Image 1 (cartoon, rainbow, N blue to C red):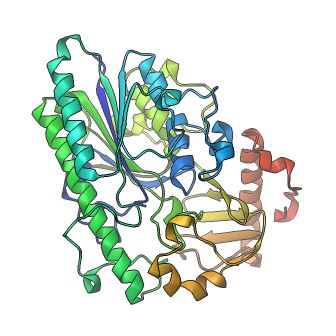
Image 2: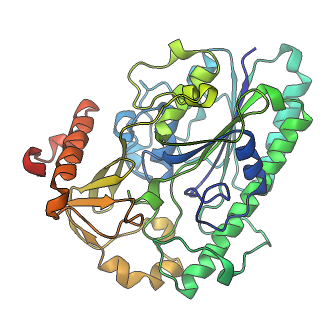
Length: 422
């Protein structure tokens, strides 16, 4: 029998879990899942906001190919009817498909192939509904199909509206390097870490229910997020804090445990990975932008991308990025000065505290960063003589990617890849 699939997600997490370095998150349940499965250490979203990122993950396609290219736009809310999303593919091979939690995509669940959906934003209520679903599935198990269950927790999405009493001490927190160390920033990061702990507790409830119902060895459990944290210079940008996300995949007692993969991987890899995991690789659409990670999970084989790509139609114009293990190149199609932030953060005290930095943030046509020497992407090498060749290569590879994926941006802007110029 094919395995059940439990896909756990949360909003605006970045990769702030205790099983990833450089943060103060307290996540015992997800730490356990990580030790029993595989952790992907260099995993990136295709877009730095929730809806475009989530649909890229469920389709295996870059946002401009599945037609949802911007955030909360009425012109782009309906999905491309030609795209076969992951729940639909699973339904076609006899899976029951269900969803519980916070939803950011097209309002019609059936457009994705989800048969049963229940929107909610509270972690405790979501966990309770998932428990009931699993208990119901267990009662009808002799005549039931395997299930694909997608659970989306709202937390740690700003503005921390789901109450939780356990707030970390501000002076003991690790503050991400893209943020200025100011009291207002620390206060909001304390709430952020509190939201992560609350979300982790809800994950623990769901995992407990999975075990109590006896689905522990028959369920592929996956945890991920949509984009970076709702803080300045993160969500809504193509810097690493905006697109670096977690991926943990565990099939208890059926797959190797305590594995870590440091290769570049993309959220668009999830669909082909799941389809190969359930023994249906021939049903993977032929023209996806992601590829399966199953050869690494199951056999330790190399699965990394040479490059990963990300895109966003920001408030001040479209941007595209290409990343290697060492370098990132960002193309701002409408260069200027000032780093705007998305509506989620317009009234947060941290934004006001960092206002001067954000107002003077440079947005040149080309940004190029050596991520090994400059992980917070502050030293733009685009104009350096020593970076001419890597700049030329990345521009050429980015152009090739946008061309082969029919990015409509090419119809609006002139390109020249000679000598590393546009």
